[in-house]
Picture (cartoon, rainbow over the protein chains, first blue to last red):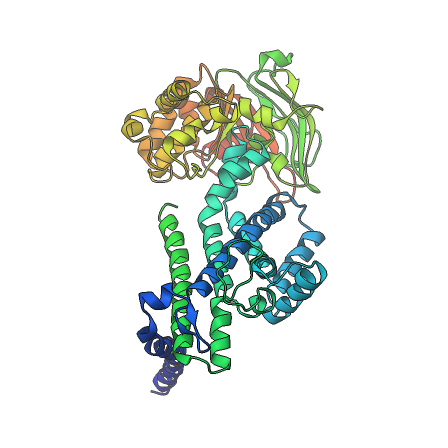
Length: 275
Length: 280
């Protein structure tokens, strides 16, 4: 009887905690959907903001967001992946590698506003690169590098030893083994990490706020400035300029990030079936 | 009968036929070999011949060093940090631990099959073509020919010939193991090292693997590590019995020689106890 009661209480508490988590998630999502979905129309997505109150659409901010995300992936991915391959496969495991890993983990927990400030001070003020897609991408890279490097490293480490042995046993060199067997095997997990990092970049506000500029502009070259969706959202809301457009932007941003997460899940699921 | 102090350097292996005098009379000519994992002396005083065009079985209880010794034969242990070999290990009369020997070249001639089937995440065709491609063979019809003949020799062709584009991971475990054998045969090795190849697969595939071993031994010298005494007795021409009697002490080669000698009239009491199932 007594045992039964305490069991029921424990179950209730755990259930309550789980429900609160789900409820918070649901309320936020619902709130944004309710406030934002009415704003969404082809015109909102594909036209420019007009006038002092930013009536009209948000097309340039969508383009700026995807531009800066794409450019930062192009900058970050090769460096992060090669660094991960080096750490996982080539570096002598020991103090230095531990320090590199620790540094990467710490780097990824630096508040993004600090990273934005550093990006501004270093890329814009010191190197003299204008407020632009390029500056913002490089500053974003600082944020994404450790994430991609660590997920890639974990993916490589998860490749079973006997798979590598199979390749060595056929007279393959280390590089042949890494490039033809280890990386393809690790690929689904690597891509999952990349897509999650992209989702992070799409939603990142502080870093691009400092380094991309705020002009509403359709970027063409990497040296063009622009305004990303999160920054647009922030400026609209903080000044109370146009709350409807702010919610519309928030909704689209969430859809975008949700899409990235779904793609990541889809990729890891699709390939897991094969193993 | 020698007593059981295996640290005694006077330990001697029993042979039911004498060791050869000249390295060119055996594929592998091993004398007084010791092996270390770091400070741990895992194998000591191993002297054995592995004869060409025959099947040699390494038997012994778990942890007796038979797999370690197998992995010395194509320098697979080089991949583990802190390992060290002392003594003589000649393959084709050349010291495989000598200066200037490239383990990558050695492993091309001394292929290996592992306990766990390990196809690559590629098609059946690409798995078998992997080794030839490493050697620079890219001609389509030549590769087709190599893939077909390797799969045939591995007793797998009939089951997969219509489906070469299928993932190597999507076939059964026993088929995967035969795919791995085909993959090794495709690089035309002189020797095939098999590390408990049948312990993780279905009986039908075991039968097919034993058949193919006997079929190909004329062309490829085979060494198989097995826990299965019946398997050793069925397929092998020569048998070596490894034993680590005391944990933490090095393992030794207790007895070695012709398989039917070992199984019908073992010289050492420990061999007899092991093959009759008294321990292990």
